[in-house]
Length: 582
Image 1: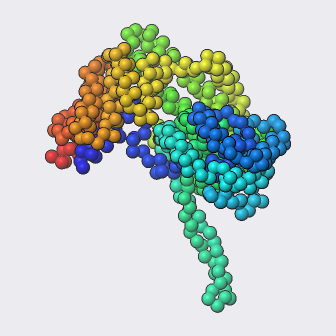
Image 2 (image 1 turned 135 degrees about the vertical axis):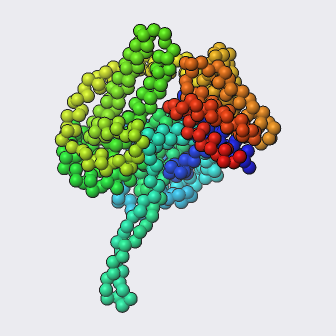
Image 3 (image 1 turned 180 degrees about the vertical axis):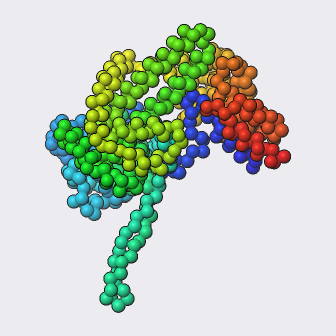
């Protein structure tokens, strides 16, 4: 049992130094996230396909569409005609709507229906928004379509959708870990509601008032949908449940799902600070009224403005913070290799330009959010800067942030960043022309290849990742990062091996790769990489029962010191644990 646990530790510890993933054992449900298809949505989207609503799909979606069309060949012409007529009439009423805009209310309608196989209408349809009410009469056709066509095939389709969902898991883990690490928080997965009720006493004369405490569960669903428009994310908030509907093969970590998940995290925090937000109501409303002069579609809801502003600020700042941190670390290593003062100054100047371009892009993103009604986005972005390195939980800091707000100072924020917006727009156009960003963080060809190979590792294609790393090693025999990533991939591949001797062989091969990092290290080699490699080797020796030698290797890692992104803390904890066991 001890060796099994140690193997798990080795696998969890083996994270990429340049494209770090969350541990193999990262359980998304601990953070409120479930990835699963929704049968209601599947049937609604299939019925729209039968109605001839042609949407651009991802490659996996196109493949599924061909299969669906083949399966629907026997659909009765009468039913198909009814579907077509409904959709065509809806399109005529909305001639300027894009395909994604046409589909959106049908997606929302799917989530008002009861679960399969009934797909019953909602009990109180009058409470639904107008655009949804307009398509609610499509629901009877959905039920008829289900019974007449794909009922027998639905379970088979669900399996395909589940496979698509499994492929989304690595990027979901990356997204959740990135955002929560940045905020130093965990989402609130339950909501306690106090409800006052009135009852009569035993004699029926006196009215007694009681307070009931109800606990509700909050969940965030990532819903794979084969027939979702390529590049389009639909987001639905139904009570305590949040749904992000995504096409297959979506990179969630760089998609609009980020903002949807942030909304899930932020909403209860804003609600908890409701009294303080209410105290700022007049000032925030003034800002909203000014924006509504240009865009009447902006909601006048003050609480919604606060939540959306927080989400926009976190989304923009997290990206800038992460890219700045990586670029700074790479520039520092690059400077260490430079021989002359001028060369070092050149790298520093390049880093400064890159950081300015990131700041300009952040300003543009915040400006775009401001125009959509997130009138406090600039303020919250400034406040987040003070939390990024402090380690303070956003949940515990939000009240102070809200109380420090002076809405009058936010009125001119948009104008203050005019120059930054201009620069960022020009940079976006330049990237569009070049069809690539040329960002500093991927300028090194070895780094770029490691990031590409890491995508194979995320999908657990360890054999191909190992093959490509060995090819990269042939071209770069002295590159420590390649050895480290090779050790990591080989370690991860051992996870699925049940044969004890075969597993030991793979771990020995991983050990050799990690040891090659140490052999090839020079004074210019990243100290964090050396620290990580020492601890990886020590854990493998520990797995093989050589605790005394493992302690010595942990001590070598400790001597390097508490370097950024290193394994100093892990080394101390492991050494102390082993010494107690002796």
